[in-house]
Image 1 (tube, rainbow, N blue to C red):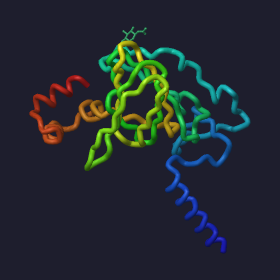
Image 2: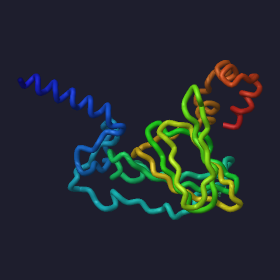
Image 3: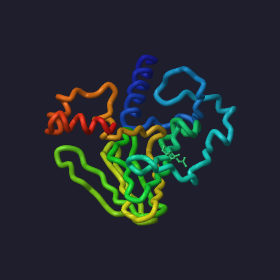
Image 4: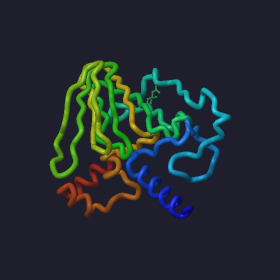
Length: 215
Ligand SMILES: *[C@@H]1O[C@H](CO)[C@@H](O)[C@H](O)[C@H]1NC(C)=O
């Protein structure tokens, strides 16, 4: 009987892990113990009795990001790395700043759906569906508009106004992760073999070398 209960318990645990995209909390909160060297899926909890308001707090999203870079945008993340109390909660927030005509280059979040709202300016946004269709779903957003980027899909934003643009986005993970396509493909360390990239992109090695030199 005890073995059966244990077995059913394991089955239930496995199923719950399979259906929940980010593990559901089993307690009120799990403020990250940043001093712990233990390796778990997420971050180790500190004693809940030691939790303070500051563990659930961040100040700084009023600050404009520095967009003086080749793409003309800056993301200011507020994930479990910035708010220890976000650990295990499956949510995070970012501020996005865009210089005129700046872009947030094509990228994906392996662990999160993103919902974005424009606070200032106009953004041309889009995402691409998975193979084989690779359909581009795109829209121009104005202040107050909201758009969703489904989990894992490649997406981008471009400031199409004449002034700066600002957006806030929420993501369905405490640690959404970012894979910027160009950086991952052309700027990996060590580099992906040129033979892979020349065939993948159907271009000459000189083109691959040139693009690589940018990353
Ligand atoms: C913005 O970033 C650029 C490039 O890194 C740097 O030269 C500049 O000093 C920064 N500006 C501010 C206000 O921090």
